[in-house]
Each structure stands twice: as structure tokens, then as C-alpha cells.
Image (cartoon, rainbow, N blue to C red; front, side, top):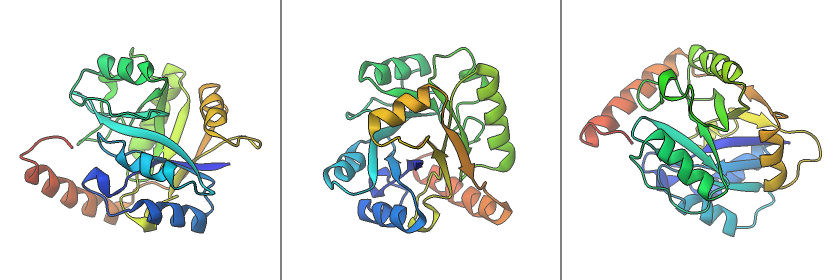
Length: 219
């Protein structure tokens, strides 16, 4: 079972994916499931769940903590932004969700190593389609050092990148409960491609422009 565990919709504010775009693209590229993770909003994942597609939709949200982005899997309600890492993780766990450190070595939005080590994360995002090969490699090393499960996702903001990176679950995984159980048991693996040189230039230009447009504040 292949699941793209990091996809954004138009409700993120910096993505052009509609929910229907995501579900159509998942079918086109052979994804069996997807996690809709909008910035600080569960609106997109709620819409995706309500559509009752053949694609398994796992609800979630990407939370902007005070130190960087944290992925919350299997949560249904918004989580306040700008809290500390520990507070954010506690809020995720209070909903029965699992907390994953998103692209920890990304300059603009990653937590950085010091904000991940020693924190009660349930997993580390080790394969992100919008991160460099070096960033993903360092994330994998960090996850192995902490003995935490690995996740992978495209971090897609446009339909053509959905499925670029993903997480592979054992045969027989069929529902949200099964995905979460397999992930926490360390039975999931990651696959996909990294951000190349030309994409890095485009990403940098986009990130700087959006950062200035937000008044030099984190997404």
C-alpha cells in the first residue's frame, strides 16, 4: 500500500491543489492513500474525507509551532499555531493523533535538530519530495539515532508532484487504523525522489517571495 503522507490543498494558502485534484492525481500515479496536511487548518482534510473516494484519506494538519512545522496525523480538529514543540505534541496526542517532525533540516520551516532531539515525537519525516537529498539523508540519520518510525510524502503544492515521495505499508493495510498501527510499529518504509537543483532555485524564489508577503513571518 502506497500513501503520500504530505499533501497540501488550496486551503493552505500556498498550494493550487483542489481536493479533487489530489484524489484524481493519486489514482493516476498509483497511490492507495493520502494524508491532507494543510497549514494550520483541517478544512481540506475534512472535505477530502467527506468525498468518500476509493483513495484512503487520512485526516491531518501541518502545525506551525513556535520552532517549526510539525505534522499531525489522524487528527480532525485544528491545533493552535505558535505553541512550543512540547505543547504542540501534547495537543496532537490529546486528539489521539501522532506527531511527526516535518522536514527537520529545511531552513525556512524545519524544526532543526536541537528542537527534535529529546522531544516525544512519534516519527520523523525522512523522505520529503520538496527537500534536498542531503536534507532527507540527515532526517533519516536523525530518525535512526532517535529510533523513530519514518514517513515520506511529496509535500505537494501542485497536482503534478503528488506521489513524488510516499510511504509504503505492508500488504493488508486497508484503513486509517491499520496505517497508524503499522507506522508506529516501524513497519513502514519510504520511497521517492528528492528536490533537484532547478527545483531548489524555484523553491527558494517562491519561499522568499511568500515570506516577504507574509511580513517576514513563518507560514
